[in-house]
Image (cartoon, rainbow, N blue to C red; front, side, top):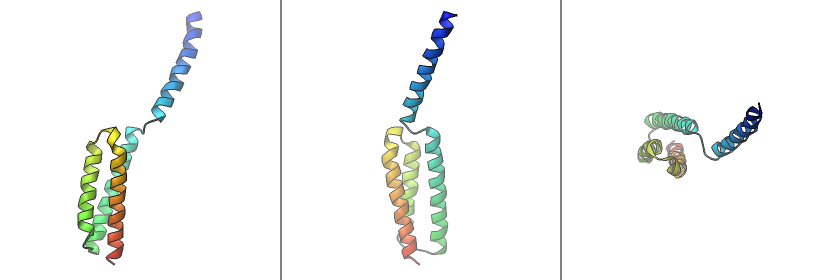
Length: 101
């Protein structure tokens, strides 16, 4: 019975510490959700570019495709900078498409 009483606080502490350590880094599922959302955004921008051609949007969308591929293959330590680059490329594509109208 005394071993059981010692086990419960030890278990509670290990669960608390494990949760705190896991909260420090983004979960892989959030990276997968981010990649899926950005893939859908790229496809939407491609459809917009095909219906209202803008000269600068094509190369920027190819760059975004490449950045998304690199994001999916990158180790977790490099994904933060690739997220920023991908977001910037998509913003540039959006600007090119809005200028093309």
